[in-house]
Structures are given as C-alpha cells and as structure tokens.
Length: 526
Image: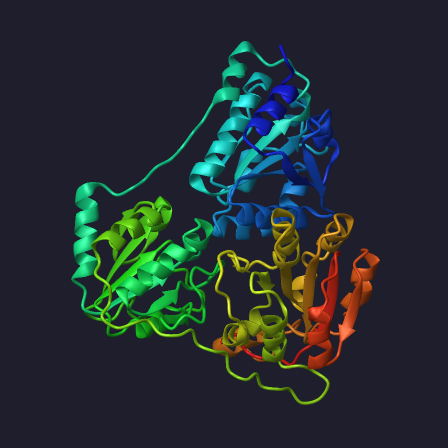
C-alpha cells in the first residue's frame, strides 16, 4: 500500500492542484517531503501574503489552488487575508499542519486545539480526519467542497499521518469526479423571462461573480438587449461590465438609502451574480423605492437566503443569461459609443492628483492589463479615469481587509504570465502584504507596483467624516519610503515626481518586477 502522503500527492496531481503556496513550519515538512517533479511550491514570507497570493492566483485561473499553512499561529496569521477570499468566493484548499496525534490532547507546543473551530465561520468547510487512513478522502472532500461551494475549505492534518500506510479503501478516491449543474427548471425560466420581458423600465445590477464565471461578454450582450441602465453591485471586487460602456452607471453606493435612490424609477431590478446587497456605510432608509421589484439570480444559496428583500432564484447566472437572450427582443435604439474619460485635474505642488496617475495608467499600459487595486481613498478618481473593457481587468479586496493588493498582484501575475499586471497600492495598505515583493523578485514576475503615498489613511479620514469623528489618533503614517523597502526585498524601485516622468516609466516594459512610488494628494473615495 502507498503512504498517505504519496496517495494524497497523486490525488492532487490528478485534480490539477500542482502549484501551491505556503510558508513551511515544522508540522508541514512531512507533507512537503518527496513532492513529485511536476509540483511547484511558491514560498511566501508571511502567511497573510501567502493566502493573498493564492487568492489572486485562484481568481485569475478560475480553479482551486492549494495553500499550505502552519498550525494555529500560521493559520491565525492568514485569517485577515482569508476574509477577502471568503467574500470573493475564491476556491482555496487550505491544508494546515497539526502536531502528532498523541501530542494534541496534552496541548504540546504547536498543537492546534480544536483546529476546525479556529477557522469557522470563515471557511465553508473545516475538518481534521479522525485517523490517518481517512486523510486522502478528507483531502478530496476539501477540494470538492472548495470547488462546489466556491469558498475556502480547511483541512488540519497531524503530521505523523503522512507517513502512515493508506488503506485499500483510500484508493478509489483517485478516480473521483464531482460536478455541478444548475440551470433553472422550465417553469422557473418561463416565469423569470416573462417578468423581465414585461418590465417597462428594467435595470440590471451585476456582481463580481459575473466576471469570476467568465460571463463578462455575455453580460454586455444581455445589457444591450435589455437596453436599460447597468450598475455594478456595491462593494465591488471584480468588474463585471465595461466601465465606460454607454449603459454603465457606475458602482452602486454601499449604503441602503443611496442604493434605493439610485434605483428610483425602475419597476424591475434584475441582480445577477451578486449578494443583495453588501452594504458598508450605515445609511438607513427603504431597501427599494416604492413600486420597484427586485429579482436576484445567484448560484450562492447562502446569499439568496440572507437577502433582506426581493425574490431569488438559485441558479447559474450564465444559464439565465442564455435563457433571456432567447426571449428578449432587440431594443429599438442603438446603444451608442463608449464614453471618453474627462481631463484629469492637476494637483498643486510636488504631488500628483490620483486622477493624473490613473490617466497615465489608462494611456500608457496595454488595454489587456489586469489591475489589482488596494487604494480605497482614490476609488472615485479611479472610476473617473480608467477604461476597462476586458474580462479579468480588475481585482479588489472583497471584504475590505487590508493586505490583498500586493500579494494578489503577485498571484495574478503568476497565473497569467502573458498578461500585463499592475498593482495599485496605497501606502497604508502596502504594509500588510509587503513581503510579497520578495516572492515577485524570486520568480522575476514582470508586475508593476504603483505605490500611492499620501502619508495618511485617507479612507478612514473620509469615514470619520461620515461618523462625525475628526480627532481620532493613528490616522497619519509619515516617514515611509517604499523604494528602499522594495529594494531590500530585491525589487527595483524609483520615486516618480511628475506626470511626465510617470508616463515615461509606465511606457517601459521590464521583464522583472518594479515599484514606482508616487506622492499623491488626498482625495475622497466617493
């Protein structure tokens, strides 16, 4: 009989999980021993960065990816980054090292007592096998749970299990296949089509799941067939629609009352691939305008169940788009041309206005560039200047937890080596995932990090204004020089001091990572 380790490695290989991310501890070494030649281990220097890189990689590939973490301390280090992966429904398979079985009860050093409970309720599934022979089956369940639920799964494995002999009943796991299909039933589809077709002023709200599922272009075709306005759902983590398309009205604000105001005048709001809704600012009011009906289509049953209003259909949004395209008539008027971006404002003094930075990115970077953005205070400036027309062009921390941007850009660059990748990172956010620069340097990834330095937590200052708080401590972060930090990790860096210099730098195409630090003036997110 093969060992648990060998059988598990073979299962992972058959499932295509041969690239994985980790930072090894003593409990993980037995799992890492004797890796087959086709496996690639991507080392990160901190578990938060490790999980962020894996999150970006899995989102960009659309497939589950393995993350190898240490026991309680390593898993704890990764939990902040895990919140973003949960909110973006990223299929991560997290395998954590546990102490030997006989040492868990006495709570020996590096034992994770009640390991599954540590990661709940964040992960969709968590377990620790009851015996070594159950490890291959449990590993398979973790992979299938992550794939089916599109949510991280967590498996804690005592490190003495890997050398144990796998039982004969473990072998069938190698040939397992688990698939999912969820088209609406005939009557459900007929009713939905009738409701949409009979609407006088329909509006479309698209969520990040549309881009995740590869439905970006399909959503454009549906919107043009409907002929009504299109919004992106609040708290957007992927862009589901071209942001300069004539039907696009922007990202819905993340408050109850402003969402309701935005949707006034529409008798039907069709929400595809999004929760209803992920609010942030507490701005109470009616969920919907009077006379407005909402229908949500999502393959996330939990999102459908917890919505506070409207009807919901748990189904594949792609199947629903196909259905509607067959029954809807073409609009009587053409859609029109894409909108051009306005002239960016300029800042006084040595700093650049964020819109100047984003206009330079728009003009100088290739049209198929993928942007990983973690600069919350410049959100409004970003959408005013960017022109994103392709799938997979935008990634943002889905739960708002800092630390996704730098590692996420590394993961996206590893997943799509032939596509330009830019990380747009605020100086407050950068500190949470800064160690990912080392991984970018080690793999010589041609990713550009544009570091926006304004010396403060700009988004918090804006939020303080909403709360009426103007004197909170800890909002300023002076004295940071990311060029020196980046060079210490092996990434060439420079401090760019003007719009012309920035444009010239962006026009270069180095075959290695680089960091461009730009001093920007403070703006508000909206």
